[in-house]
Amino acid sequence: MTQAFIFDCLRTPRGAGKPGGALSGVPAAHLLAGLLRELVGRASLDTGRVGEAIIGCVTQTGEQAGNVGKVAVLEAGWSDSVSVATVNHYCASSLWAFNTAAARVLAGEGLMVAGGVESMSRVPMASDRPPFLSDPATVQRLRTPPMGVSADAIATLYGILREEAEAYAVQSQQRAAQARAEGRFDRSLVPVRDSAGTVLLAQDETIRANATLEKLLAMSPYFAEMGAQWADALILERYPALGSVTHFHHAGNSPAMADGASVVLLGRRAAGNALGLRPRARVVATAVHADEHVLALNGALGATRKALELAGLRVEEIDLFEVNEAFAAPTLVFARAFGIPPQKLNVNGGAIALGHAMGATGTTLVGMLVDELERRGLRRGVAAVSGALGLGAAVVVEIVPD
Image 1 (cartoon, rainbow, N blue to C red):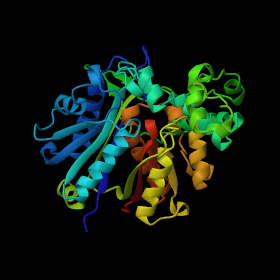
Image 2 (image 1 turned 120 degrees about the horizontal axis):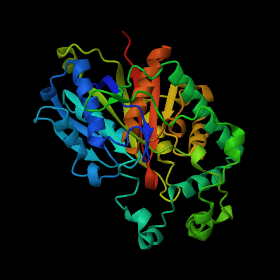
Image 3 (image 1 turned 180 degrees about the vertical axis):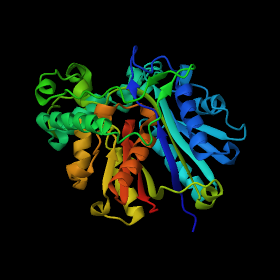
């Protein structure tokens, strides 16, 4: 039976996605190309053996337009024979890419690369002007509130209290800071260098180790004003029983905008054997899902349910979960829905602390998951991401013993 195996996972550190961030001088294609060159070195990879690279990128305009994945492959000096697709599945883009690459392997392809890239400092979110966010007529016609308002609506609908959300955000920061200090990310982390070889960034930049519950509780809700002016009406039209939307998300309990890239090399066992590569993990099941688009950020719930069903596994049989922190409240709803104890969820922090380079997040989570399962001597894990308009993706992986 053909199976898809993960041979290696690499990622850049995540830089602050704003002017002046450590990676703000590096175009997205260069971020990704650095990982592709490193992959060749680590795996002694003959790139002509790779059937295709599928790369996630959300804001495909400016420097990220024109199939940025193919540009990166050329920048990295890979074979012209490598086909490349750059895809947009919103924040689940690179996990969608991973799932599709795994399906290609199951269909007979020997080696595939899945990954993602986003430079939010150089190509800001929504600078491609997606109509569901930037065109008032489309927003009203489709009833698409800003995602922060949707996060507040999720908190209101599911009874998530502000104190819970702030405590979770502080936990994310503390766990990420500890993981960085202990070197838990080092296996997959590839420093970003300039053309002269000088290291620009070696560790994740957005972690705020000094975050406290008191500091976060003092921050003003960011989305309250736009909610009051027009966006809450879109929520209440769909959920009139709410009566009102309680707003409490702000920069401290939201995913930090980031620059970064990530890649995963996967394929058939025989293809890996031919290169002397030992499989690190097996892809057990993959799934995508679309949830209700007004709440926008619950797609990972349905995708995870579907992936677990396809794998024939119960939540209790999963050792670790890596779930993109698309604001604090939706993450807490995910944990509550599946009954996931804190010691199994985002054990090294998540996007609130580590940053969310949108197109790269999915395969970043896959790498973090495989690394931590191996480090702890555990067996199975789930990575899941919710994207805009209700989209979501999930994967179940299982460690391959030595």
